[in-house]
Length: 416
Image: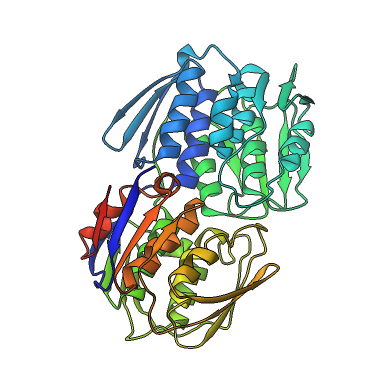
């Protein structure tokens, strides 16, 4: 594994064009297998998870070509319906291929998924949704085997608004016979992006972004050209990096309307925001204010994915902040690493009490999962001295060349 070496105390100021969204591009790449045709995806970020997804496509028999930030997928040669164990273990989001492959092949075999160790993420909701559409499922020896002579529309109710389960249900339903209704569906902007891409392919999906999605099945889909939405979590991470260092930053190619909960917290912490349709300008205060309580919730609530980078901000804010993690039970793995840097954080169950200190100190720390790694980068940027972060493979799963974007805005950061 490589490492990032960061000399703290430099203001993060400048302009960043935000990359395409990791959590949107992965299910959209999976959806390309549903058409016996060519699809062209623009604004695809350079990420380890995108590379792994491309490899899944190639092993299924698809042809994948990347030119800069455009990925072309030719699914006409797809000749397999099995995702091998090594890829499923590396990337949990591969499970979204289940609905897409079933839609195309009427059968699929995948192993139980892996991914970042942030807690249990059972796929029972995915399987329950697929069963509602007529899919027969067998689980044996760590593999999930699915088949369906015919997919039929149905009424799907999700006990929790799971993003992955909503995506799998959408992918399986678009070519099912009849109409499917998904209630208590996830409302995340990435769900909307997937629905829009499916509609570009000839699907009939409506209600994305609300808690009820309606899908009228069509006989087949065709290839499409589509531009991936900007990454709201990456955007908020760069805002945190600038705010914690007292800088002024302009984000372009961003969608502020998708970031309401995060922008509200930044304003409460003292950041001055100028928000336009596709840009955000933020000026940091001399020292950030604490926030009373941040509770992670499904969209439009505060995202679990940005909890840890914002905790790094709270670690040097004036006063005490409380974070309550309601989504994943093991998403405080960054706390011990922040404590190595001098942060005062106490964890009790799913709550973390953060008492702001005046300064953090550079140290040797380890990224144990994607967003926790981003939190360590944010903390290192404002710390005194030098911080070395190992475990950069996790960070690279969701952040495109993070050292390049930050160094262009004044950070003293390098990769080894």
